[in-house]
Image (tube, rainbow, N blue to C red):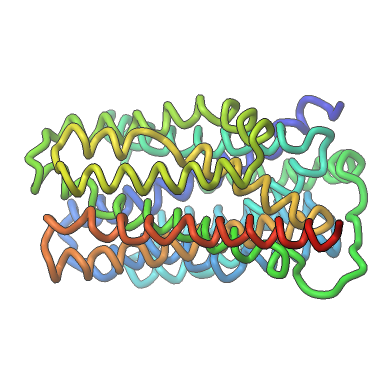
Length: 386
């Protein structure tokens, strides 16, 4: 059993990452708009840039973890990257400078998530620790949605908050380095595979593509959910706020049941179930659009089951390359988040808000097929082996 403080290493890392990320992408554009800026392209880039950097650099940091195994140093780099993003945004003189800070910090910040997940999977009963780490991440999203708004209401400016968050994140980087020896003793040296090239890309590319499509279906809907709910469906603003907090709070509680279900049924079956849930949800919203139904579709947090099952599936597909596997998982999420807003914006701009459910529905129709093909391939391989 690892020391208690080291069991909190991964949940704290993902909580810090999620909190900093949601504050930047959600509240910074809003704060700039309220101060009179109309640089909407810049607002979109502020949202997308952290995910673009995650897409590019998370696999590289994950691969480095598999080769070197120095999780404390990689985590410290990740913390420092987020501190640069937060402090750079806090003191930047304008949107171009904010984008530079996000790009520079994002190179290093992309290391934090693979490091946390890699460390979780190296502990005894790694699946349980990974589930707890993902719960920490959900807690960071929830806190990031509530705390900045509450502090702003009390008169604390957003950019002052970001400065404080950046300093706190730098302290966590130092604490991570201070725990280097104990972290290494618990995780042990990396298991060096004899094969060349990322095993995850060879053995699990079909499930990875299916998970990418599920992430994308959620992002294209989420990007315009608030506008769709309050403008087209005439839903009240309080319903939008309630669903934002509700989906994260419920999802936070569901990570443990998601782990149990993934162990009982298998990760692949849970991934198929989440893909079918998204398909049926968007189909229902397409056939009978209403504010209550849209709120239900958004609030029911299938993402808890998706994230747990996908993480376990990729880790099991490449047991000696968990860093590479988690980097690929983060890259899929980063790609979906980078593309979801622009694709949805172009689609809604051309056809209007009435068409919003069509796009996630179309993506959801495609998402089960890579998973079904992967199961068919596994069955064929098992038959050949026998």
